[in-house]
Length: 157
Image 1 (cartoon, rainbow, N blue to C red):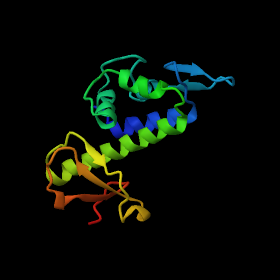
Image 2 (spheres, rainbow, N blue to C red):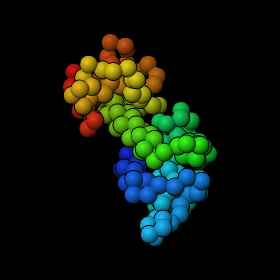
Image 3 (tube, rainbow, N blue to C red):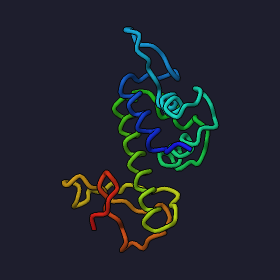
Image 4 (cartoon, helix red, strand yellow):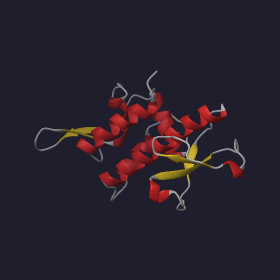
């Protein structure tokens, strides 16, 4: 089984190299390959474009949209929304990668896999030090046990 975080990091590199909206994949004027968000995830995971059995799609849907589904429609709707930019797609990939890293870390820390870790939107006093604040999706931790995590998933209490 592939690690979802590693697959999404590869997908991010594909989107960063060339992004397309309205198609799974395409070619740029100079012959480079362009991928939409869903196409990039599937290709990075070694699946065929439009394959609906990729576990990384399910993990991405849960982390990004709260939907534990193999269905790519959530990803397609996000990618193809009018006015969507490559930067917004990359930002969502970054958020999901951080959420999945945080969830993996929390599983090691507390021995229970949270359904989803969410990054708090309000600024953290640690934000200037490159850290984020996470809370579990469900109440596996008491509010007093909010975890502050660096991007590389290490505790900084």
